[in-house]
Image 1 (cartoon, rainbow, N blue to C red):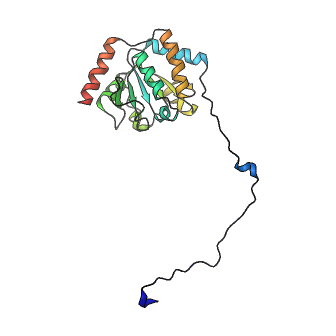
Image 2: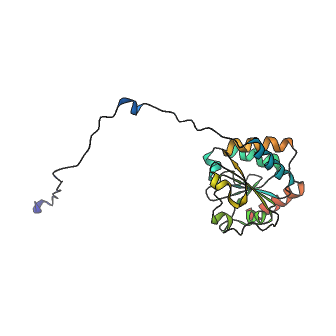
Image 3: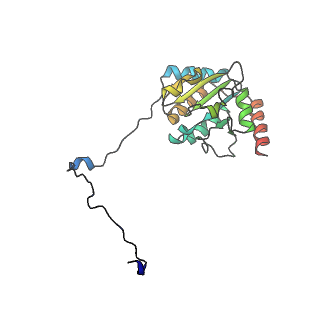
Length: 206
């Protein structure tokens, strides 16, 4: 009634519903096991050879690093081979911000250190990234005329971008396999390159 300030709510007379007698097995617990695939040995060997040739390599860490729970594997890879890591937006947090080899965000919304290192890179190792326009600054990020690309991705359509050597497989398992082979082949960057990374990182942090 108006004098009491009450509100009348009108409900529909009929509510459409549908019932179905699902069989009991439909509700049984299931565990889906996703295999951590590794690329063929031949592809890994070609990537190891590229790492051996590289003087100024860079790793681009995308969201796939996090989805694969590969952050520790990425840290081990960067430490063992002396390679700076730059991050996409989806890859933020792949390494702690103060990790010795974390050079920060890359691309059109990236930072000084990451963008300079990427511009000069002679080898780009893309891990779990689609290499989108933001990351690649619309294909203008990599200026070294001799630059090569290696791409680790579970999606082959992304692994082939930029004419990369495709390593179609799980990020964590592939990084571990690649690290073991590269360390055995003594593929590590020079102390001078490490100093360059440290200097640019300090400038960016400041």
